[in-house]
Image 1: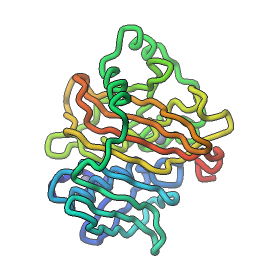
Image 2 (image 1 turned 180 degrees about the horizontal axis):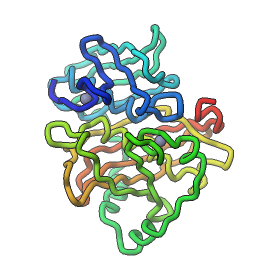
Image 3 (image 1 turned 120 degrees about the horizontal axis):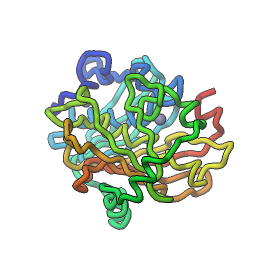
Image 4 (image 1 turned 90 degrees about the vertical axis):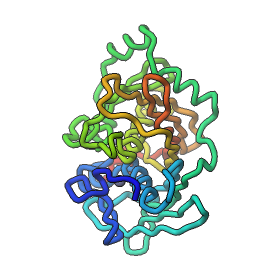
Length: 285
Ligand SMILES: [Zn+2]
Ligand SMILES: [Zn+2]
């Protein structure tokens, strides 16, 4: 085991129980009101990978098959599929909830070099972009009301990250982030919150930039993450979450997102596939 994050230790934030071979998301790790957060689910793949791979996790892929039950023991299974790769599945009474893999080598780049440099170029904002950010006033909508207690973006989530991205250009959504010290792992930001922070934040612009219609919402379908150097904690300059919608194809929306330091270091890159559903389905109604 080459890490010791809060989600892997006994306590209120514990998600993984290695001895019992179960994962269990406490209620504050919700996304929709009654089911687990997809970003936390993806983040726990990094925990499970750290427990089974001999080198650091470099890339992971997670597919969400159904809403993740909260406060419920879910079995996990890890299978060796290569020297540096493990298949990981999470199930409830033999029905897949999550499937995917973790690898200590990069299998394929998540985004083009062009997209990566475009995201990275916003690690520091121009004065014009900064004032657009500062002056932005969010109108309450489905994402802040229906998901008010979402661990990642919910404005009412007391134990959550409360990350609300804002547009800094017509295409780039952005937020600076000063993670709480409880998310420490060996002096750095733990992988689970770092990956989770790039979940629904990647969907922040969907209504504003028109990829989602007024009566549409979405659910996370798959999530890919590529991990760079662990992000610092206690850095007065903080971190940057930078996102750009790639495209919508029918009922699928693809987005690119990254967690950067102001010096441009990419700590986590994410690629999310969202599935368009009705607002009722999205909030689990
Ligand atoms: Zn962990
Ligand atoms: Zn959210």
